[in-house]
Amino acid sequence: MKKNPGRPREFDPKDFLNAALGCFWLKGYQGTSVSDLMQASGLASASIYKLYPDKRSIFFAALSQYMEEGLGRMRTRAEEKPPAVALRETLDYCALLSTGEDGERGCFTIAAASELLPADDEVRGKVKYKFDGIKQNLITIFSRGQQQGVFKADTRAEVMAETVFMLLEGMRVYGKVKPDYAMLKLANDFVMDSVLIKHAAD
Image 1 (cartoon, rainbow, N blue to C red):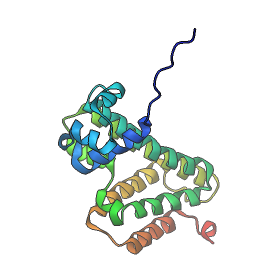
Image 2 (cartoon, one colour; image 1 turned 120 degrees about the vertical axis):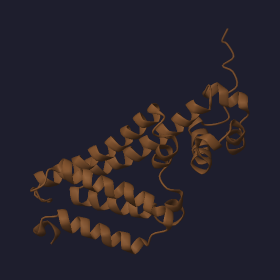
Image 3 (cartoon, rainbow, N blue to C red; image 1 turned 135 degrees about the vertical axis):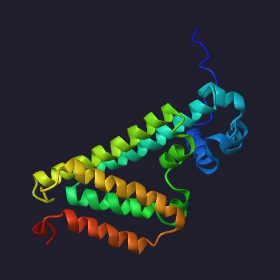
């Protein structure tokens, strides 16, 4: 006789993490309560605790999901698109995220770092993982571009990646004060002009 498989879940754990992410993003880790998470997700505390033992584990799961989705998008661009296109799309996507409501909200990784560092070593490890992932994808873009004769080769790909990484992260912080999107695009044009070999841009 088959056992009753039990009542199926009426929610998607990923949807719960998206709801939790919104809470942590708005109120911060310290300012978010389990009651906030219940209200945002529509789940009872018992359902939440079946997924995660405490608020901290929910926070890290939401942070990890946010990081992996962002790194996945960037990895796809870095590995599958022509290097100049990949760099341009990375720069312009960051400019878009740094304006309007998204810009004012800022980057969740930076928000976590600002709130919980330097005291929390686990958060430091997660933030470093995200930042290292961004830089590695940029290294991939610049290395491929140099090999293909698209980007200038007088500077190591690692140095170019580090420079653009700092620009991208600075742009996300800048978004808090509502920068002009057109000006950000012009700054991105300057970066592209600085790294492209002239014939590659023609």
